[in-house]
Image (cartoon, rainbow, N blue to C red; front, side, top):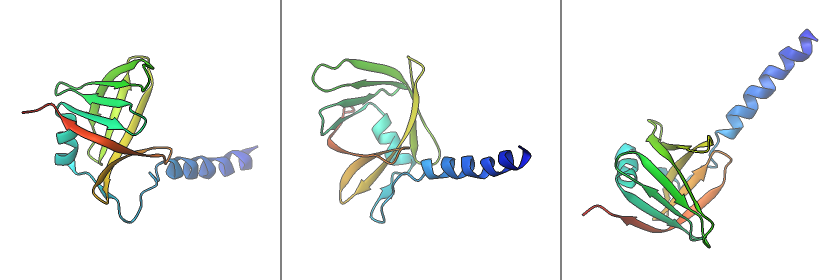
Length: 125
């Protein structure tokens, strides 16, 4: 039993590291703090499925699903490593990374998924 447990620890650690791969491509440029702050300062992002992320300057966040699929509400925070993390009211949490690739903003999930942003809007003057 002791040997099985010792063997399982490196496997679990390797899985955690693989989950953090972010599926970065050589041409991806991770947004710096200033770029993330610009999104998070009252910005609205529309994705190709017509879902919309809305960031409020005070830290409130909402995601409206396409096709009248409802809205999820939460709070967001900017992490120092290029991530925006969201804690939803329903207890679910996630962190995403935003990159620029070929002039387009792309959301990367911890699972390695890539979601290009269709429309970047800012409600700031």
